[in-house]
Image (cartoon, rainbow, N blue to C red; front, side):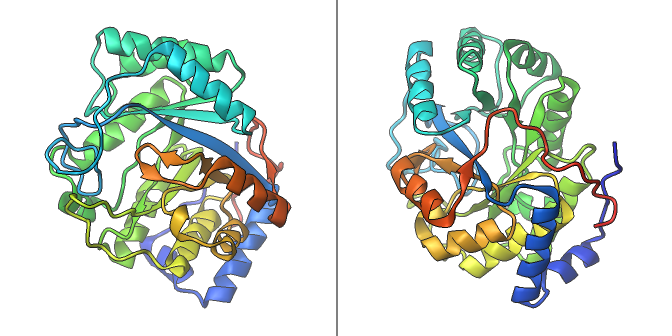
Length: 329
């Protein structure tokens, strides 16, 4: 297995700040060397338990302490999740990510039900991902034994910026959960959000954390903040599409084999903007009308976009693509 190349923050900044067309060309070249540039994974994100979370994440409408329009829903039944998985698969999704608004997983009947959900979706031949908050090592192992393919636990931002966004847990809590997931031999999905008032240095600090994980995450979601009324970040301006493309391009250059997910914020992007993101190295999207609780393009609109751009959905369980090493990037 090749050694993944590490970069300094200065190197990351120099990449991010390249002239836009040079950056796009470099990222597109790396993407084509290591991946099938016309192949995009389609994932579906399902909120299996909504609202009422005890955390204070400044961007999240599901925090109990904020006054948002989110309706609180208790944990879904296994049959409801099975039906949702069937619908997602029929629409072209190869991965189902189940999200629960919990601070942490507790060893109780709700967790037992989630384990059953994982087994049911796994049996359908879909990649099963979960994002349930903090995990212990034994809990991660139970999820792995049930057939979990990936665990999403975003680091959100740089360690310095993180303290300004969240106070109910610290950065190391995030990293410890990722370590527990790795010990259970489950793949890691971890990225962050831009548009929360952070500097470019913060964005590169977040990438530094991700590229220094060993091994690096198999997938990295890049989210543009969806500012929700009632949250502390409700007045943040929209992220310019150029910032999104630069972030995706830099991520692709420094993590050539990672699946880079064009995640939240797509409803504010036109087709041309999304096409630039795919050219810059994004090779996964979340499809369906909602991303947990925020709006997202519908499956039919995304399939029309795929047709226009000549993109094809990636099959489930496909390993990193071309037989190349990342040492020379």
